[in-house]
Amino acid sequence: MPSRARDGSPKSATIAERVQAILDSKELTLYGVSQQSAERYGRPTRFFLPHNLYYDLRAGSFRPSIHQVAALSRMSGYRVADWLRVFGFNLEDITRLQVLLPSKRTILLDASLTDPNEWVSCFDNRDDGVSIPSIAPLGKLLKESSGRRISSFQYSGARRFLYAKIGSEDALAFPELLPGSIVRVNPDIVDSACREDSLISDRIFLLEHSKGFCCCRIRLLGNGVIMPFDAGLRFAQVELRCPQEARLWGAVDLELRPLLHSEEPQAPKDLARHWKPQPLPAHESFGQLLRTTRRRRRLSVREAGRISHTVAEILKDERYATSPSSLGDYELRNMPPRDFHKIVSLCSIYGLPFESVMRRIGVDTVKAGTESMPDRYLSRAVAGMAAKNAAVVIIHTGFVKKLLEGWQVIPFFLRDTLTYFSGSAHVSLDDFFWVGGDDDPLHPYLARGLVALVNRRRKSPLHFLSKPLWQQPIYVVLKRDGTYLAACCEVENGALVVHPYGRDFHRDETYRLHQDAEVVGQVVAIARQLP
Image (cartoon, rainbow, N blue to C red; front, side, top):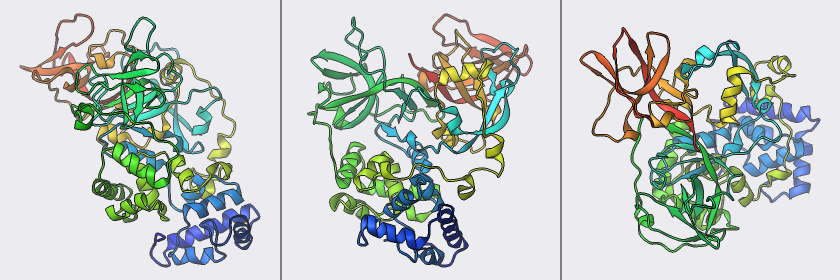
């Protein structure tokens, strides 16, 4: 059934007027579009657009299905994602929810849904002539400049990375990777899974098998047979044949690690006991895809239904909630929901790529429009900004150049998920610290680090003798000479004691609190490169 809004609501009337304005800009009429949809797809199909669409939209009793949105896209030339925004859907919500929702197993994040024409804030070097310190707040190194479109940061030849979220039951790379971490995967590094003189890979790889995804090192057995390497002996040793039973997606080269709620991963029973590998699924229907993915993520339909209510709470719309019986019908009857709210929930909960779902329900986005809608139809930016920044010459020097060299590609899809890493809805530039200049850091997590996110309200340092290194909180300290250090520390008898855990020997350092040193805050997340 189509989703319903309150009859005659102003929002519904606004949508109808906007659709009419968009069609007028392309010299199209609703009657003509309706006739084209009938000729191209047929009246009995889901793609048919009724000639009374404006009336239905104003009445608030109708929202077009994804098939009708695809038909509008193809006939107008505008992108499917832009038409969905006209009707109140933002595809970037799918990726944001995939990050925010809990997950037992590692999932791929759909980072392809970022709108390249969205405007974002930009920053320039504050002073090019000053040497870059080892640790410093970004607010002292960068200054805000005019906004730019995301597409202006993209260039031909740039690497296309994949991103995954580590699940709570993925312990193969623990403690090098923690549950909840977002990792970047380089698909170009696959053939070098193992060095010629070693049977175990130096790198951590994203591996897919019939039971799902995991991040681990690889043991090479020869003849295309590999085995996930588990140094902790928590998982059964299972041999996998590539590419029939396993697929290497690439090497993990960067980790975005949240540190607020670090927990030890659990080894699930189905992977701890010996299991028989199955061929990777291929050519699945919509219902088969849902069933296979749900089982790989170790979710029951009741659990998926409960998580859908969390989706509805986050997006503040009860139409995203889906009952377990409906989820079962989608799988058994192979019938996708007409209501696009449900499709958003399914992609978010199951970790499904949006394009993959579209193909299975008969929507070919390749044949849809490719032109971006003007900002005025989507409220992307204030009027005049596009003209002001129409000809942008991107010149990276100084600290900006060094920062971008570490990232290579900026993960813009994470810009609305800072709450997940910080635990706070209010994050500013001063909460981010550059930590990439310290060649001998006092904590191993800071080795090859790039940027740390600091909660400046947590100024009471704690050090737990009974907890392992990966659970020890890290703090940023400002010394009297104006330099910063990042390390584990605590207060003893009014003195600040710094406990180094670096690869080289360092004695504990003691500072007079509030005189020789001041605690800036606790590191709650860190972005670091992996070798």
